[in-house]
Image 1 (tube, rainbow, N blue to C red):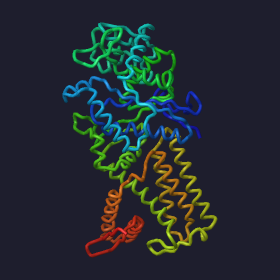
Image 2: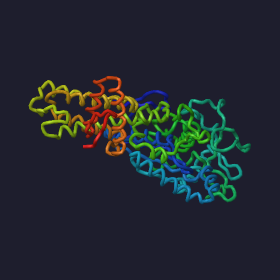
Image 3: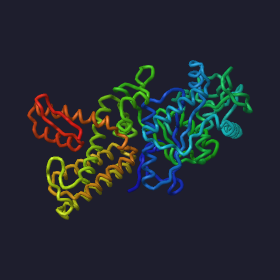
Image 4: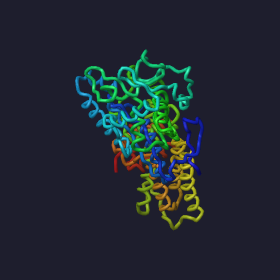
Length: 480
């Protein structure tokens, strides 16, 4: 089946075909390290990590580049407020970023270029744009002339006459058009600056990504990605300056992840709800957070809440615990904890064996079909849950084919790895919390005389390695 993706540029689904067969050139806008990362950053980089992983799973050689915007107005202002150098602020926040990305099991990019290491490259591209009359200089600042680039607005689908200036600069009377954006900014007193043909200054926001992406991936990218908030003006301006300079298509496919809301409110530092990742990962296991972020399609908004995370926690632990139960019970001798004899593989009929093989194939095929449809992780996770439930039910039979159940467990774990979910990172302390939650559910079921549910929970607890004892005070658990 072909891989079909939603291309922001065309506003429709297209079959994904890279420029060079078997190889993918992928660029994702990185952080501006003026502060700690929040859950919005987590969503973006988890999404594009999964896209990269799935492309690799399909056999593509992916060259993934992600930048650091290590000089910017926000960095300068923050450093001045803290009375430290911009370099110290940047290094501190990059280190924090790398730590939380590692904890979220995000693969490292092939390259992390920094703006300050590419000033000469930036100056050369600005010079080229001036030479081709797409840019002009006014008092030491260089602007891109939007009127000269006729397709401007093709990514955001905005008409020039309906636009307002959206770059990170105030409207300047010196500009020929309010929409023109800065390629090079004249230095202000006591700010970091670099020499250029137009005097001391520093790069504008948009030019840096064009320069660094084309330097390491060539004039035409296969994939350019980022959050929806970057479509305009950042990505629109990247297209304009890049294609004006090269005469080539800048990126063939554009992917954008949806916004994050907090308890159904827009995430904003001014509202005090932009939780830092380090704080969140102090409360929730990193794989629970990663799983949560993948339970919605990447292009749709996702509402971040404690209730949502608790539901995600139950979901991922169910997968982990059931897979662990299958492995543990399949490797044991004749009996399992509730005393039912297992005859092993000898008693399994050909029909049973075919049925389980079909379950496994159906799961893998369904997972791939979901991911081939614009990386639909929510549906892919549903296929994994279905197989887990089917495999678990097989232990109710007198003679389940153990090696096939083990194959099923391995399939589950392998597909989780495609999503970057490392079940081994789910800690024992979290398992204890899960067991305690099940204990409470069992007490409630017994109180309501729901004996079937009570027995089901008892079996789950036993599979997790707990001895279950009923007392007048409720269910008592003891780790075996």
